[in-house]
Length: 316
Image (cartoon, rainbow, N blue to C red; front, side, top):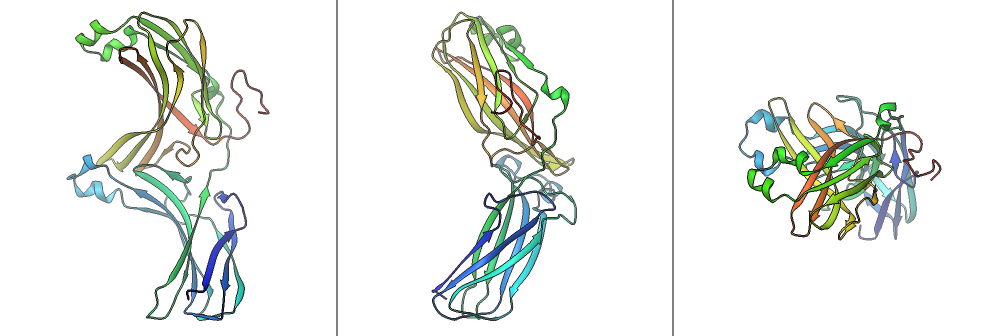
């Protein structure tokens, strides 16, 4: 069997599929000589893996039952009964429907998070006799939702303002006294964003007593695992971009432009067993390392057509 090489080839080069699509491809074998096997099986699997954070250790059993893996796809196809592979190249073609036949009756988008992962893959297994170990090959692919139009009200600009007055409600008395006087305004170009287009907006430092060291925008995933009886909610950083480095000229409008990473984001997802949500943190660091921040809850969707922001053209 050491002379046996094989691989799973999908018909679509980008390996991106939608629910109800037919998964077409073939398993290619290359044998230096005639090779005996005990059967060739192709397995199709789609699964949601939920993982609890360390802070949930010791919670009741109902909590743990709610975070069991969720099977979205589970199918198998016998490509060949026990027999022999001839020397040279052999191909076994397959067609498998991408349909979720049981609850939740929907294929969620591929997503790679910290505590939640949605994965889809094909596994080809070549069985051998009882003395030999089975050979396997794995091919992952992506599932995406079909694009839908965004709501009209999602195109409304979201203005924001950072000042000591807006931040002092959560600050201690000591922090209020040491807080420099400043006013920073800006906007996000919309409340809902498409996962394939950048998050855009602008920020302007109107005035500040203390020099600014850096302005950053942080994208955060908020993953919730569990049910009504108990749940674990964790926020972790996906990426951070720097909007400004060093002190910023007053009244100068700075653009916000953040490209979303493909596999580490997905449309906002709310289910009875888990949630995948996203937030933005605007972080302003002053010279003395005093930091202020503003949090924005955002909704991600997979929308149809281009979504130009202000100052861009539709065909970009």
